[in-house]
Image 1: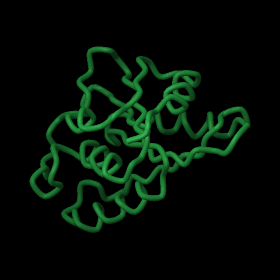
Image 2 (image 1 turned 180 degrees about the horizontal axis):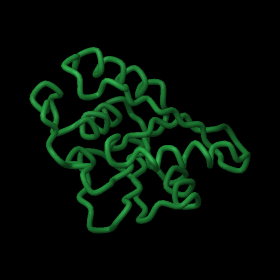
Image 3 (image 1 turned 90 degrees about the vertical axis):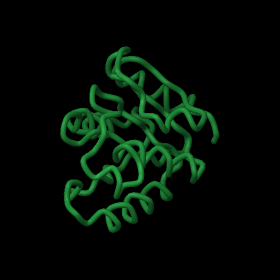
Length: 145
């Protein structure tokens, strides 16, 4: 095993958090060659948008890769989209990840789910289906931005 990747995980907390929990279980396995951090603030729906943005930006800067879990609602408009500055938090996280040069790895849970709009602004690798081997492969093949 080489150096572990520092991975920021971007996902829809309300609908797809169980996939993040599965990552935690896989990460406990020595064969799973990356380090990931759940940097999603618990107060994501609060009115304190600026501190959330600052915290997310800091964690994105600490990462080398951003793993984007694309569920059914990954591109839906957030009620605070005007304050966020993007359609939703996932789009904000992707835009900041591209800006900071993170490698973007996308796992789409179903092939008919719409990718976040900001994905198209950078280079990325993508897989269809959430399996341990797919996650490892998509991270290994994520291109430089």
